[in-house]
Image (cartoon, helix red, strand yellow):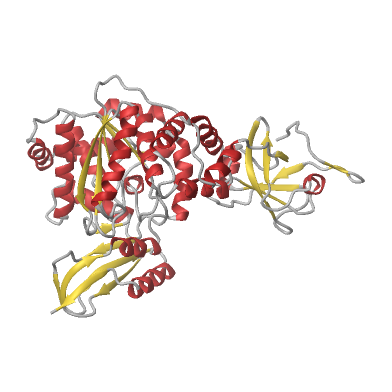
Length: 511
């Protein structure tokens, strides 16, 4: 494909256009351009590795990070792009690639001010978020912004401004119903996959729930990761609307909808940093819900010594910020404190958690009772909160909707509307981690369990994770399996098992 684009000229050799050569390099969502260090444009413009440059193909442009690659991968007149950059530019082999200096980013001044502890004005936060959502920030700048806003460095007014800026970075859905319900968990508790069950029960009870979910940030699975093993979750806005109008609810990935797109970029970097600050947590949750058109939101907050929220004072601080921001935007929220002392259900990891969800909805005798009880309690609270059940009768109503099969039929209808229901896969490799001695289980470390599941490959490999066999207060014998690691690669199985043995997650008090 020929493009009439400017290109650099190397004196003495004449013009040398850069031609796109696909290499299939996956950098997730980070835009990267690859050039030969002796190419005309690098020599003419003085570009060095890690420079931020503007890349153009046809009438499309992006900002990307420059990496230098020599022969035989690239010749001097060739350029390549990471998969995300190639997709953004609709690049095809042979396209002419224009490369120039990236425009200066005025918002970086505000970012530096935040790093030094200064309070940002609304316009400054707006400019930072706009540059992030437009792909103008390198990951190092995004990391600096996240770190500068963590650990209480953002006040409530800044959190409101961050939320508003994140909503403004994308589209907004509008519904013709007075009450649009939603449910969210702040995370930090392995296996706590209540959302698909709660949505199915509440929708069977008459509520409208355009549920959009994130992928995992610091956990082995997010609701979107789990649902992706069961059905299609990457729906566009028009498809989401069709699903909700048809069956009353959805269970989709918010990242495909351009709802608060800056949040998805921030989440990608948060995942690498393994952080999730209060301000970012509030802005992330509420910006997505505002953009999705929700009016009434139940927020599940597990509290426990190894959960994300460890103490009641942490919950109180989070609830204060959440309620203040919600009030500004006219949202009704109900925060529910739940037990975060140990994992929920049997499975930890997308496919394993999906199997637990199906077992509960199908009313299987093997369904984890704790996942069922927690889901029914939360669904009942949501039904009461939205006026779909009388006060004090919500949990009973939710239990009836589950036991009658109405919730299971609704879940099937949601999945069919999103592209069909499928059975989650299974991992190739498995290994038991056993009790070193007989005794009673006194505690389970959520963080060590989550880390073990992630080292096994979750959520990237959706069949990987952990299958739990014991709970707190269970009595065990020496050699009894405490949990089973599931992995799709033998190396990941060994790595995960080594970590599990070096960092015991289950405390057993000997007799």
